[in-house]
Length: 94
Image (cartoon, rainbow, N blue to C red; front, side):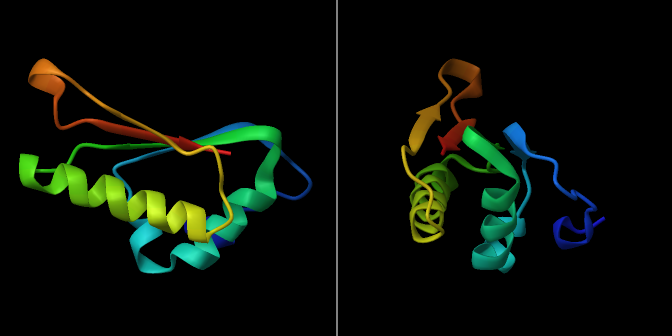
């Protein structure tokens, strides 16, 4: 089901997780506005990506941070995996 079609009603969430989704690349403004509307005060959005190549890690992190900030999120934290998990990216924002 598309995020815009989810029946959230008055529900608010402390944490919203998204793993390897590109919904933020399609219509980031719309999707991020929905997420902001369902986050509780002090809630955080957590995004996890595993790009297919090492070369994509920096670009995905940079573009995601830019979209989050443009969408009104703050306190963005980027963490990258190490060792065999070096391609994992965890980005969180409030």
